[in-house]
Length: 224
Length: 150
Image 1 (cartoon, rainbow over the protein chains, first blue to last red):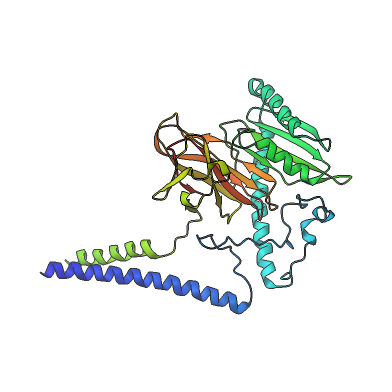
Image 2: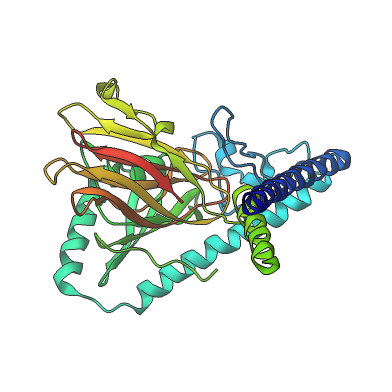
């Protein structure tokens, strides 16, 4: 009987402690939300998406986002650069948090891109793959090209290809990437790939750099 | 006896906290039931079995799941079940720029390697700021998309 009593006490104590932990976490979360509301700014970290609620995605761009140009659309606004878009909260303290977060985010993206580029530069040429990959890639790009896109460089090594393309119209970048990777009925390049943000190339054109990996390989990730 | 009693209380406190206190992991996951069918020809081709989405038509059908991204770098793993290697699953992740229409990255297509429940490691995706990611699986009859971890 005494043993049963002890077990019962232990179970009750465990449940009590767990409930305390849970309540403490809730109180902590509520306190943080109240504090954020009191300061009149958003939570700097995005909320995770939960079923029944839309993901919160900030679309304003007063921060130094990675993309140097807006890449969709033909209108002149697509060439102005994201920083010209108005943000009603730009004078708010919340903008600082967002700027910091964007800077940290963009630094991680840059490290990843640097790692891929360094990997490509360090590779020797495996002709058994590189020649065929170069030909395949050139054909795929050509089939997606219009008169406004040109191949400036195309270099395949042992597990990576680098393609530098010049497009004169932002919508060509969109169409090119969609056709390059294909869909279920017409699969495109089968390996991993990363497309660097388009950079102004002069005369209103953009340069797009792509790194395309050999099928079955993974792209290197940057140091955390 | 006091020692046993003390250990019992400690164990319950620890287990209780592990169960109810907020975690610190940045990893996320989503059940396949959050997916959607991008091709009209696949409408009605999936049935829900628990948290899984099972392909039921006798042609290749596609399921997409959007991922919520909170960091620039993510490793994406898809959990599937394959009835046999003649009815396989091929999955990929696509990264989009903030404009939502231009592709910023692709993991490449990877297929299940053997029969039964398994994970397909799609590797790392690098997501531009304000960019988005979705995963897609091209599935043959009776294969199932169970969940995605990232």
